[in-house]
Image 1 (tube, rainbow, N blue to C red):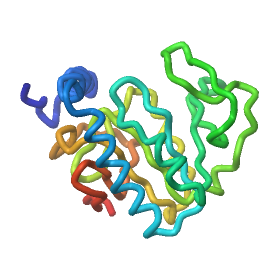
Image 2 (cartoon, rainbow, N blue to C red; image 1 turned 60 degrees about the horizontal axis):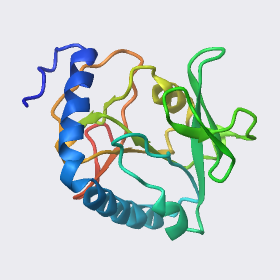
Image 3 (spheres, one colour; image 1 turned 90 degrees about the vertical axis):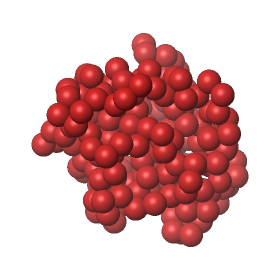
Image 4 (cartoon, rainbow, N blue to C red; image 1 turned 180 degrees about the horizontal axis):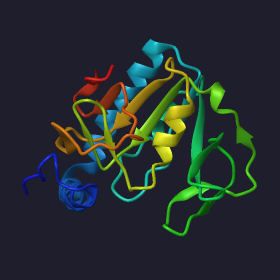
Length: 194
């Protein structure tokens, strides 16, 4: 299926990306996840980071959980999506107790101890799609955009998605924040915003 035009709505793009990603993962999700994990393993070691925000894969997202065991020298963290007082992410240690959200995502329990955002040196984030400039198509609540806005520019921002889900240009809004790197099955490479 051809991707929508760059001036199509984000809703049209999400519909396309969700269907496209489901088609892609039927045969290759484990292979692609394994390749991306290997590239990120090397990337994180080369950059000498000690504090990394990752995520627990939901649905057809690339699974990065094996990195936690492969890199015991790195402290990994996981986000929790909160709606009050407004949509925002809080950061928690990887091994805190988890619960299923209303959407089915595994996330830290509501009473899990928070970690200061300022500790982070790298953020690994999933997306339905990314464009070549590093802009992300998420699920529409702006959680990661709000987090990225608060982080220092020194924090490595890495989008994680198959190369098949990378497009020339996605629709953008003023609050959208780009990543500086994209990790896919071919490697970890700089985006146009880096």
